[in-house]
Figure (tube, rainbow, N blue to C red):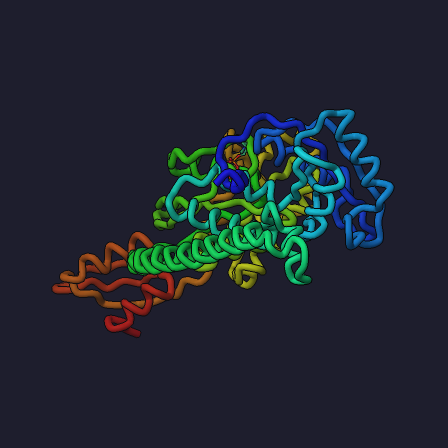
Amino acid sequence: MARFTFLSTSIEPERALLVGVEWRTNAWPVERSLDELERLAGTAGAEVVGRLTQRLERPVPKSFIGSGKVQELKDLVSRLDVDVVIFDDDLTPAQQSHLEKTIGEPTKIIDRTALILDIFGLHAKTREGRLQVQLAQLQYLLPRLRGMWSHLAKEQTRGGIGSRFGQGESQLEVDRRLIRNRISALRRELKELEKRREVQSKHRVKSDAFRVALAGYTNAGKSTLLNTLTGAGVLSEDKLFATLDPTTRSYVLPGGRSITITDTVGFIQKLPHGLVEAFKSTLSEVRGADLILKVVDVADEDRERHLEAVDRVLEEIGAGERPSLTVYNKADLLDAHELETLRVRMPQAVFFSARTALGLEQLLDRLAAEAAASDRLISAEVPYREGSLMKVVREQGQVLSEEYLEDRMRIVAKVPERIAARLQRYAVE
Ligand SMILES: Nc1nc2c(ncn2[C@@H]2O[C@H](COP(=O)(O)OP(=O)(O)OP(=O)(O)O)[C@@H](O)[C@H]2O)c(=O)[nH]1
Ligand SMILES: [Mg+2]
């Protein structure tokens, strides 16, 4: 499997060169995007030794960047002793292959997508996470697979000399077939796991808790927030994509309502579509949430762009229409003046710090208000034997008044729709 080193999980410190293009339509200035790419490279264990940028209208079909730039790249690679060149935009398989040939062995040419897939491979811990990453990696690899003799494959279609050297071609075909088979097997296995997950989450819906899903740019502090609130003990690190697998914990809000909070994978600009596709089942936690809590790193100067990227991914996974609340983390990193300016500019916004717990009550009050927003007011006379129903009413709703009658209790309560439906049979005027 030497050819599949792409899937390897051990990465030696490599010397990386970053290549970025300043497009006319760029929402992100190229240097900012390369800063992020540098952090990604660092997370994957590479050391960035240089950058190359070019202003372009559109990609050059053959080589992505212009031919003069390619020459410049080649010189830089040999001068800086570069192991891997990382393009900030997606390369087509043909561009990648062309660049590899031009720059020459053993320098690898990869793109942002390959880098992100590599990091995911490093950080996936659970079975489902690993399978999802593997699926995305193989799908990326398939069109890029080149047999050692692939140049002969072209000869073969023409016949004549070289056409007798069929081995390269057939080896390539075998590789492709093996990968396709593996992709189908992975898909099947993930389907199974997804079914199981659905059963589990049906279970949870039964528990009636209001479900909050944390979503946000990678490194925004989602895992730290979950840890601070619930002591979940999930990994939180100053690394991109520290979290891949979802974790759900229950939490009791001020006022007594139980909710569940799910921490899940973070997003990034130019998140590979294949990865989003592969993580659909993990992200179903977000899709099914009663509230999506969008966590933003307020201290990051790109926070607006981060938020846009998050919205785009939410859209892509079909969660764009879910109720959501945007909250601003890492407020401890702002000085008093900056914080005040933001408060004036966004009077409704919640600023907090998951690390120092500053402003956390305000966040929780907002959550409680959101959870109560769709509550229904209901009067009911509930028989004492319905003890478990009353327990749910107290945990998930708010009992405004109660009166003890002989064999039942009369209540007025504000409860979520799901529970109102269960109380309905005891409802009174
Ligand atoms: N100063 C400060 N740092 C924070 C705060 N919250 C999180 N961090 C730091 O930010 C980094 C990322 O935090 P995580 O909780 O791992 O972020 P995440 O959103 O879960 O990131 P991914 O799982 O990679 O998507 C860590 O180094 C945290 O210690 C905060 O309120 N203030
Ligand atoms: Mg995390």
